[in-house]
Image: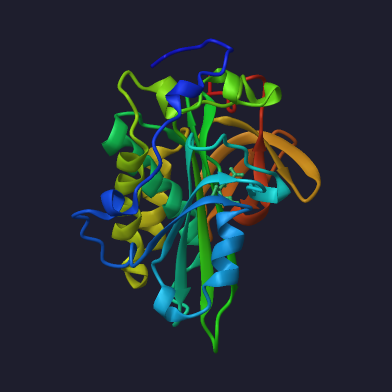
Length: 286
Ligand code: BTN
């Protein structure tokens, strides 16, 4: 509710997620075959890939109230106090290898933006490749892990972390000026179950039909929800930091950047990451 105090406000963090309420009356084509709610787990992504081996678990959802070793992209960690966020993994068993992992990494944040918007009225922006920011601060992140399945299938763990009920003091000091939550961004009370339901609905719309994904559609949907092309960026890739302006998304789901040092370079979603320029996470053109 636009609060900015430094003190943790634990009273905001209440109410366990309830699987029946989350799935009630949801008409999902692929997701939600099961919804397992855990009190404590090291990482829902790790759990999903170790536990779910067979096609019969395709579409399963795991969510936790707390993670003791939540994982972020590029070896980072993901912190969230108990009950304050959505910490969820969607498990997919792609038996026929229909899913293009590059497109998957772009459409997941698209679905999360639409889900968050429909449940809360907060419309985050996507920051390359699949971070979600509001007011220039990180609101949510995506970590997609994969592993071989039986025979020739591929198993995906689509991990989603959304900051919902944190106040400023809940974030570690070094993140306090760079992270936000739905409660801080919204004028209305935030219900985690409503957010999770809406995100599952939006993800299901895409994930139910991977054979129909067109790179041009996915890239357009991503661009429409992302910080505008032309934004100034610093981007870390292969142990180096580059700076320039974003130009486009390539059909292989790579960010095309006009480098300050001259020339254009493609940065693949899997191993590149934006760096703060100065305070906010991006700097607009002009
Ligand atoms: C990032 O922004 O670096 C990605 C963060 C992803 C966090 C989620 S929380 C649920 C799932 N389980 C994990 O261990 N990580 C992801």
